[in-house]
Image (cartoon, rainbow, N blue to C red; front, side, top):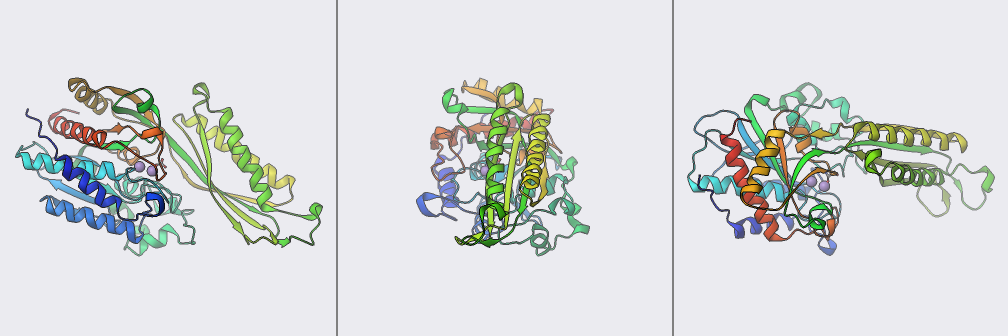
Length: 419
Ligand code: HGY
Ligand code: MN
Ligand code: MN
C-alpha cells in the first residue's frame, strides 16, 4: 500500500500555533487544565479538525474526537494525547501527540485512501496532575475507570475542588459514567509522545517502542504543628510544621535512592509542591502540606516505598508532638501495553530501517488509561538532553516529522490488522 507523506510544514506550523498559547517567560508554556489558555488550545484544535473536514465530537468533559469515517462504521482506530501542560513546562509534552495524530489522520484523508474502519484523532483533557494532583482525567473518564469518590482529594492550589469544577460542566456523580466510551467502538489506541528522558538520545535511537508505563502513588501529607511567634517562642517549645516537612522531604529522597536500582524496582519519588501556612517570616509555620509522587514500573516496589514514606510521616509527627494527615490522591497500577500493537510499531520501524529502542515509560500518559479498554501502544521520539517539564524541553523538528510519519503507517496497519 502506498504510504501518504505528511505535510511537514503544516504539522510544524500547527504545533507552533499551539505552543504560543500560554507562552510565558523563557519560552515556557503554562496551560493548566480548564484554564483560559488550555481551553483556547482545545478551541484551536476543534478549528483545525473542522478545517481538515473531520467529524468533530466534544464530550461533556472537553475531550475532543476528530473522526474520519471508514468503509464500515466499525470500531475506530484512535490516536492522540493532551494539550494541557505543567506550570512553566515545555512546548512538546502532549501537543506532539495531538497535532501529530491530527496530521496523520488528515494526511490519510487527503490521500483518498478508504480504510475499512474509522480513524479518530483525539485530545484528552487534564492529562497532567499539575492542577488537581489527579492525572489523566479525560482519558480516565473515557476509560470509565473513575467515580466521583476518586476525586475526593483532587483540589487545586486555590482550593477549587475537581468535583465542583466538573459540576460546572454538568458532570455529576450520577452521570459521570456516561462519559465512558463503549470499548466496542474502539479497535486500538496509539499515542505519539516525546520520551521525556535520556534513553533514545544516549543510545542514538530515533524511535522508542513502549512496552509498559510506570504508575504513580500520589498523596498529600499535612503536618499540623502550631503557628507561633518566631521571636518569643523558645526552640524547645516549638511545633514547627515546616521542620517536620523538611525531615520528610529528605526521607523521600533517601528511601527512593535506596530503591532506585533495577532489582529494587527503579523507584522514583518527588515532593513537587509544598504549601506553608501562615507563610510569613516572623511566624512559626503551623500547617504545611506536601504533595508526594512515587512511581515505579513494578507495583510492589511502588507500594512498599509509598508505605515507608507514610509510616515515616507518622513517626516524625509523633516525635515532634504534632498531628499529621495522609490523603491519597490516586493509586495507579503500572500498565503493560498490547503485544500486537507493539509488534506493529516495531515492524514499521524495521521496514523503514529506523533505529528503535524497545523500552518502558517512566512518565505517565493517557495511553495507561486507554490500555484498560483497547489494545494500546506508544511511539516515543527523542528529548534533547532528556529534559522535560521545563522550558528548555526540545525535540528536533525532523524527529517530530519522522514520528508522525511512522504514526501514519502504524494507523494504516492498525486499520487493516487483526489486533
Ligand atoms: O507526570 C507525568 O508523568 C506526565 O508528564 N503526565
Ligand atoms: Mn507531562
Ligand atoms: Mn504528556
